[in-house]
Image (cartoon, rainbow over all chains, first blue to last red; front, side, top):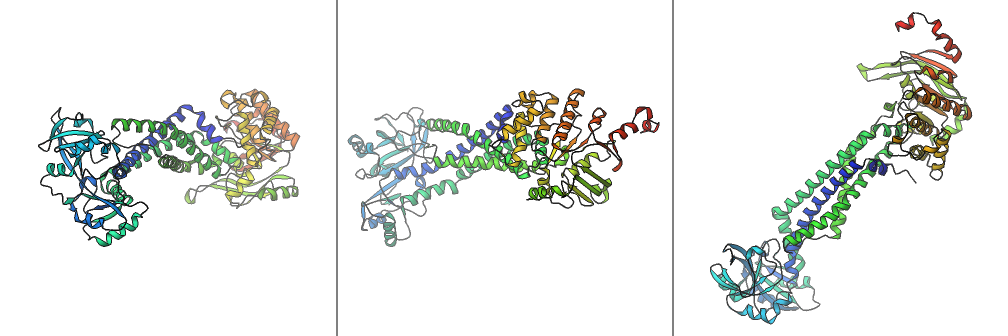
Length: 380
Length: 257
């Protein structure tokens, strides 16, 4: 077995090793947090669509994402209903309301969904419970999302408060989550929606939901509907609309940029810390490395030693960084009451490990020059 | 490849080092300064040669040239029957693997034990199985049997230098180059170190070229050469050298220098 020179050199200076590990772990945590937020953004964007019982969606081309929809005529939905393979079509109305916190009397924007109470729009069984169904049908009554932020006040069933200068009663509760766009959500019947958003004709809908018969290929139906409908609506599969929302949040808002920048800055911090450690290590061992060259080792061997040290640092720093990130994810999830679906993914865990190794290798490449050009004649 | 041609040609001559009309310059263009002038020198196998001379006379430069640590452009420099003049750096590395180097400082890795430091040299030959036993053997010969698993921090100066010598000798190099190996040692340790080197040279027929200012160890030499201002000034046997440098025979010029 080869003498593990890289390992022994690193572990000989315990304090320096600890500082290096802390530095890499710090960078890894920063990267994980930024990617976590970015990932939860994407997940939050897609979450609502995984809770809706429809495979094909109609949206206005002017719609950016679900909380800023542009209404379009409900006729488009009826036209789509005639296509073979479509089982059911359902309109969805969506918009922001000003919710008054009954305790503090402060108002806060809340996101409201309007549905036909007869339509099984959401894949949330408790919405179909008799009590909730009855509440949905009562005037000036809405169901409230348990994942709404506490700033909206108590959410006890029967609570009466004000929305956009109109009385509202909390008729029941459900669990959905509003993602990044909404701090809280309400679910109400289309009739109530029309009242709160008056003047709002029910013939204009925010989103058209199309449920397909079992075994029908959504892509085919999308093509078929697209042929029938004019260009004032877009026909998208669930995957397409999720991708569209992700792209909106990540590419066209500053959110994606901020977190992307966060990842880059974290990596630079990591590169600098590891570079410092490796450079000091190389400087301390310059005579020894030059001696190795003198007795017949090639520059490539020394290059490899430094790269090994970098990879060891990457892996040693990654382990605590990963563990602490898991804890921070948990903390974030609890702090947002589960509203921000942040969590570890295997793909991300592996990518960050690779990133840490690349980061340390870059440091190695910067610092290794000194040892590669070391002149063995200088040791005499 | 170089190694095999080296071994085949070993029988051609009895000289480990053969130098003809060697000149060496430092620097480029206007700053070019000649440090070695027309050196001619033969080192036969099995000889212990001590090189002395005032500082700045080019001793260390000559030593690094023979050690294939610098590229040479003019004259002829044959080391272990290999012409170093005009050789590429990559091939110089191969030549260096057949030379044992002992430096003024021990240059041991603090993070490695005595044995591991020696094993680093054995690994150059791609010998993995018995490297530990080889390292222990050579350390034992140098009187460090009970120190093989100590790190340099736990060794005395003399012991560290002996580990460095073990590292230089473990691959049985035909040529050993030493630069002030005793400079950092006290009288007793210095004596031990050179006696060991002498013993190994005699037993195994190694050629040793040693640069030193240490008059206490001159007696191990078969031959003493003096370098002054980049020129080979004297080349004599030990007896002649002692006679010429006998304090009783000193003239006033010695003190002016």
